[in-house]
Length: 103
Image 1 (cartoon, helix red, strand yellow):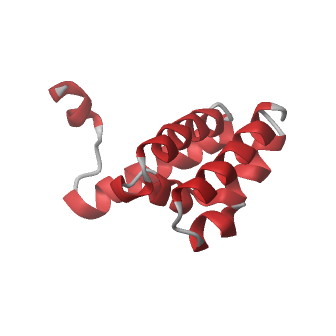
Image 2: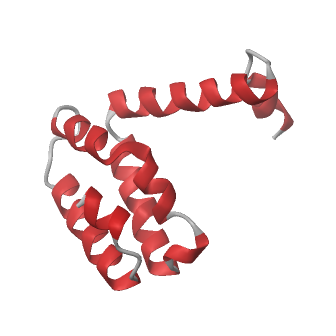
């Protein structure tokens, strides 16, 4: 499914692939099976699905897919660590908490 999403740019093909991925995730155990599936997807393909040119329906399904993936605790930790590494790289600061205070 990951390769289909990356290679095809047609909205209907991407929508079908994301829908299949959502069905697989909804039927899997959030603590064990989603971790394997989430690493295969990687967050790269999700970023492609969330872009404007992907289409509104694909974006909506991609948000649902991200929600299901982040229900797995290990994937949530991986996602947060990637965000904090990017924050450190681009700002040079090691604390992410000022962002939360400003909100």
